[in-house]
Image (tube, rainbow, N blue to C red; front, side, top):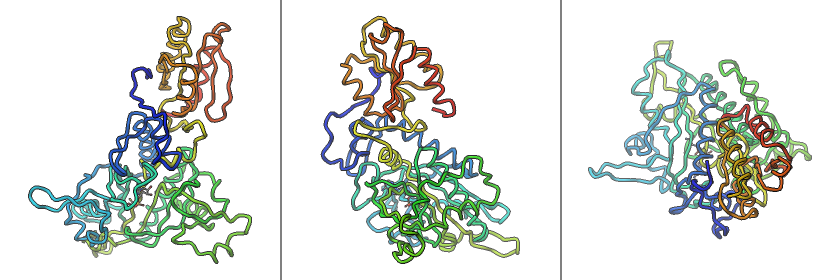
Length: 446
Ligand code: 5CA
């Protein structure tokens, strides 16, 4: 993409309303535009990142055996009356009436709707387990939408739902999502810690929140420090095998959000030097709530014993749009965002320091064309701005690498490569720079 043709409305001033780095940088880097509290347009740069996050989530759901579908954003009130949650949800639910006077709502989650799909089509234990997901917009009329996309009112969520014949089988499904989540967040460069969590209006006893630690996080968390650096299980996990030991390894140490925190247990179970109390951003939340919805809504299957059983269910959410902000909270500096390679909106920025100079234009165009052909998706700054403006703009939007093409270097046949994260610079021939950048993305699909 040529910057001169892109839509990248950068802000010079930091908007006063933005309290945390991710919100500030998302506004300044032209990623989002607010329309009303907690409701945003995703401008091209922000949208590109969100799509990449969504794709990683999708790939890891699929790897775990979940199947993608799509349910509507607008739901009928009747299903929620059946489950008993129509009143429970209170003012957080956006209620709508259609022209026929029918009560509708903008879905805050989809347990009821998928339970309805399930009870319509599934009759026998032989069709179980089922693990279905969609990636769809949600609306929650939050009391305090804030921190940009972190606590929005309209937000994009991946939500999966599992149906099993009994509780043991439901835990097998739960474990699949538990492991898939760790791999998902690790692919985005995040260290997400699973913590015992409160289940709130979703319900059930078995539940984990996945939190990334950040001072600006809304949740207060307490955990054993060793959990933070525990490596993700890895993409070669056999999701048809027994995952219990992998889950146990990551749940045996103390890790709880403040609602579940027990100061005594924390002290007795965790040595003083390992006690970590911090703030965190909740990027995922998984629940196993058994027959809460299947019982209320009559979702039954015939079991091997010839009797009817209520499906045992779980639901599993990832905050896709929240992750865009979460990743920035975890990875930025004073100059701007630092994207991990896996979610960067463009693979590399090419800065032409003297647009209009024959040699600079020729070399920049050549690098641009070759990197496009190599599938690295470069952003070429071909605008006629001063060097300083170009450097700070490229630092702000945070692409992992920059290639700087200037008249002085070209006299010696070199361009400069800058690593955005480390600030390291190296001089290379244009061909070597192309090869270097291409190699950095060899195992990442952009
Ligand atoms: N039905 C369950 C699982 S599918 C559910 O709704 N869980 S949840 O309420 O915990 O939401 C799942 C994830 O969505 C959260 O972990 C969080 O990352 C994200 N999320 C929740 N509320 C918001 C919000 N207001 N803005 C942005 N993301 C949100």
